[in-house]
Length: 321
Ligand code: NCD
Image (tube, rainbow, N blue to C red):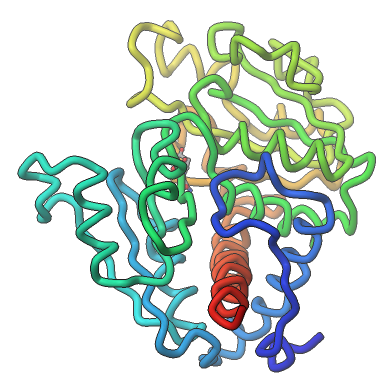
């Protein structure tokens, strides 16, 4: 299917909103990744489409963001939507307005899509119940970050060609990470073999029930890995001392060249960003030949175009019904 034929696109998602990957089927994930693959080409050719002409997308970010917010903005614009970035710091939120009041205000402007990032798990779901537009979760607390997992999956598929039997080691602060959670759900559903590697203090309490292999040492968990996915220490979500010090953490958990050498020879290195160099990853590895971290950012725009397009198709169908 070409991007032009996507204009008459068939439905991709069965849901009105994208709150998490938890509810996505293998067929939905595959269709989103296939569509995103087309949008990689559209983006590389610097083409602008008119698929979303007349539609309004509002980005509502209650937490800081560089790549997620800007890629949602670019994605909407490349599809032809009008995109509005609500800067929470300078809006009524700074004056104490509640999430729901803000949502109702925005809803009155009749947007088609609301992209929301919020520090509380469940915030996107709550909003989705209160507004009449489609909601995309751009990260809610420790809960989910579905578009990050989709862009990671696209990056992995481009390098490994498949998910079945691909060994993916997710390393670091799993406990506080919505990226880890969404990735575990999505990659396991697609048939990958997921491992999590973390100090026991940074493992999620339900680690044994996640359907992943759990390791508490990089030396034990990295051998045989096709993909090494590093995570940032989510210090803003830590309410106590989870690690002795950043120096100690780097010594035992940081990804350096020696540790990377334990993984498969053609293993790729991923990181959702923002990176803390010298804490979870060495610069030599982050900028090295096996790093696909910049490619992840590129895939982020394409995946978000696919998600926005898929949800807009549902809106169009709904209006026609
Ligand atoms: C992640 C997030 O916000 O959850 N960043 C991102 O979206 N690229 C990961 C992080 O903040 O560490």
